Length: 77
Image 1 (cartoon, helix red, strand yellow):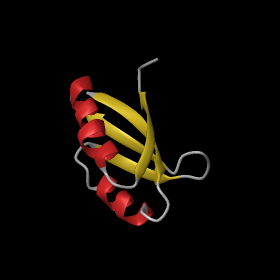
Image 2: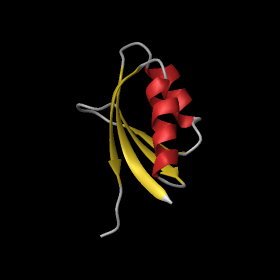
Image 3: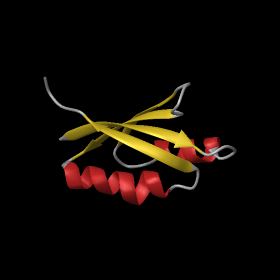
Image 4: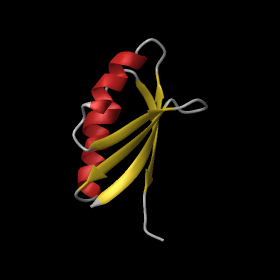
């Protein structure tokens, strides 16, 4: 299992629709709306790194209203 945090910046005026789409995405475990440079912090879970890439590229980044992302793959300490 691979987990990660995706920081997402949303385009103005599309926040509600994009948030709804992200919440319904397979692999998305939790979504937090935040203030600052990013608008959302999304916890994602996938079987492996290629599966995580698919969630990001084919889903989250493809949604209208997502203007930028930064992905942090979590690791054990």
